[in-house]
Length: 284
Image (cartoon, rainbow, N blue to C red):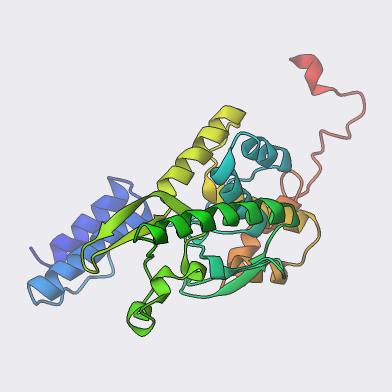
């Protein structure tokens, strides 16, 4: 099979299988890898390949009441993590991978390390979470001290910091803000480490809270980050500030949240609404 067959296959994915654009792109990348790195050939794709159209979807919008209903059905550590995702605009893994040194409670700031695009940024700590965060860190610190006494207390360090700072893996400031409930044995170092809380546990807790709240929307952890942005816009904050807090490189990415400032279909009042003597409800 050659260039013609590749083109026919990619076209059939878009026209007959009706797959998403990302699925077709993944198939194309796999084929290019096969031909270039395995078969050592350079395929020439013609212009006749029909490409699947990428869909532009608006994020799931949660009202303040819906967010309150979700948070009200969460408990302890999962509640605190969900509050940070909503109150600070954190992504799921950004929340799970927070380290103690990333929290500056005196300035009410969180430094997000290696966010999307491997960028650092600073976001706000909600004032209402100051007390719960201090209490949570105190419990985590006691757990870490107990780990150290038992010969554990190590944590994974990024990049080559473990070689540069051999003792940093046991330092409190490098520990996870949300540690896992169990330790594990790391074979390469022969040390017993503690990982951060797994993201799937938080995702499951949010899903269960959405279901318990009776919210008929496909809300997820990322919906809390969307709510952070949309509710800031509703409160009158400028879009550049929100862009910095979210860590968006392109302003157009942040612009998608401006749809919440509109009422109905782009803020247009339907001609049926002000019509005198007409009440559509009477016909039901």
